[in-house]
Image 1 (tube, rainbow, N blue to C red):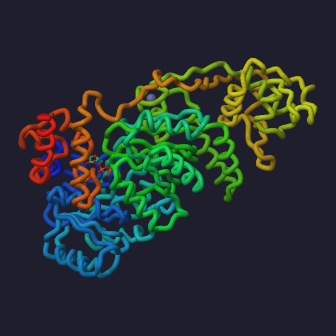
Image 2: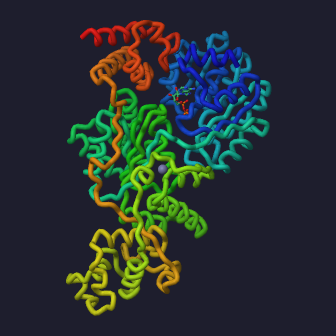
Image 3: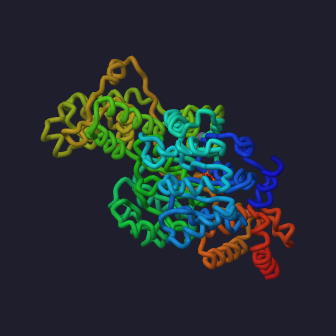
Length: 599
Ligand code: ADP
Ligand code: ZN
């Protein structure tokens, strides 16, 4: 284990393992198989990179993310690790060279695409090469039920058959037990030690607010909290991504649209810009998903609600992989609830399937409407227990008021009933508030007993009541009549006065002063030095054709600002500075710091 710690310090420049990294590494170094479930950003890569360096031979990493291999390999090379990759993007001569290096035992790590690995020719080559381990990254790709299924992954059980002496480590960030079971059976990992890390992402701050003017709310969020940061904005439709990206461009942001309707070349180009340039905002549909391995995504904003908690967690999980503070910010409103409910009802599939989808949507709505800690609810959904509220979600930071909505809910339900369950929210609110609209007179609704009984609440308050009733399943949305609300069985006890209901009080727009804003940098940091270090990093990154974070993470630059190293030995103690980077960049960055201090 000393050897592993030495590699951690000297090669990667980190001082300590994040448990259970140490146990996993020990298992694999001593020749055992391992199954690793760790959240995004948990630090899975070191779990196979360090054993590959500690054991004799080359570690073979199977990954479906071809677009990332180049960057992963460049990053390792900068650390002094002998790494290469084999995939369809290589020309034959280069590929041959890689193969020769492998056979000659000159590689520490080889990244390979699954379709390449399973070719007989490759397998024979591997049999003749010194191999230290096989790492199967994104192991959930064996699951036929998941979104990321890869047929080639099914064949990976052959590793066990043909290389029975070589340890295997399978890794994924997908949480659920069914997928885990599938990985074990399909990859023949029955004997493997299992390491299941907690799924909490403490550095992500969860916030879900009410939507009133999506674009302006987004703009304000970006301006006040994330100027100069990279992030992702998720929208439901292709058109909306283009629309929002254009709007942000006009407001001076470096924003790009991303969806499945763009050509492959455009998408590849935008993805590369997102990785290589700083402060790019990707406005995307869920087509922008797996393979976003950018560690310094500072926010994920949802302008539309995802359909499930799983999707929400996966999408928000793309923020803050580097462990630094990051925001998961979402706005939603009555229209989202209505739209998603309708989409579910009209979806293809059996009744059973629809019911399951409805339940998953209900869980997502529940998360939006909850008045207690969001993180507790999220983790609870994945079967984990967080004993105390987190202090880093909107419910914890600005506790939500509730009010006794029993009377209001009864009025609302009765308005639905009396008008024949044929009308949408706008008209129902008019009836409750006694509005003198054309539609009221057209249907003679001014004579109903519910007409005008709800003058105490304003328009927004009534919409809030209806939203919560739909979200909690008291009302359903009629497909035949767009947006018409209908009573559900669940209403009865409430209407009969046998049940009370507590509703969330939607706060008015919060004043900027009251809101907890996150400054992107520690307050006491010297901004001029920070910018100078970032410039230096950008130049080096451009020269070497790698993304800036491959040179140094933000965290490392921040430490430079606070520690102000004046010598190479001081510089070497900074997190993320290993031997190779010290040698390569130490002097350059020390010079920037010295110039700054002298100025
Ligand atoms: P995952 O693959 O699980 O999403 P990564 O392997 O990319 O996560 O690691 C996430 C980030 O955490 C990376 O920037 C990595 O360098 C950093 N990291 C991992 N382990 C440690 C550690 N023991 N100490 C400090 N930083 C670490
Ligand atoms: Zn909380």
